[in-house]
Image 1 (cartoon, one colour):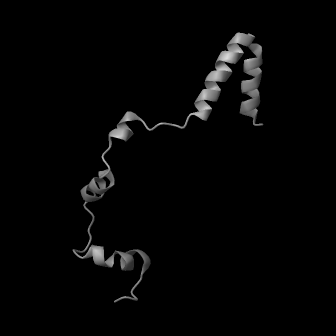
Image 2 (cartoon, helix red, strand yellow):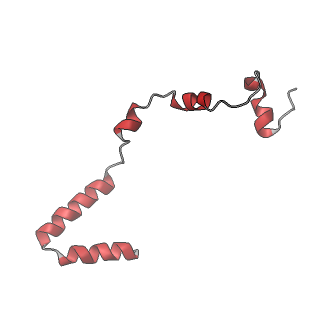
Image 3 (cartoon, helix red, strand yellow):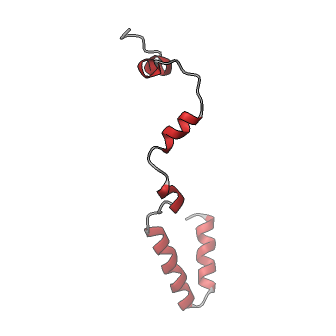
Length: 79
């Protein structure tokens, strides 16, 4: 158990039992529940990464789709 966990347990023990139960149940519910993406993240369209890449205005050759493996990995075997 970490120091932070020990501190949490000590803080809970100082509280009345009904308050301990309420807070412990709340913490357990938050731990067990998978984190949901924020509304802003949910509303982002799936093409967002492509928009960002296009707006980056990268200096790439016209045929980059054909040469990306060579540029990334140095692969020249198929040429």
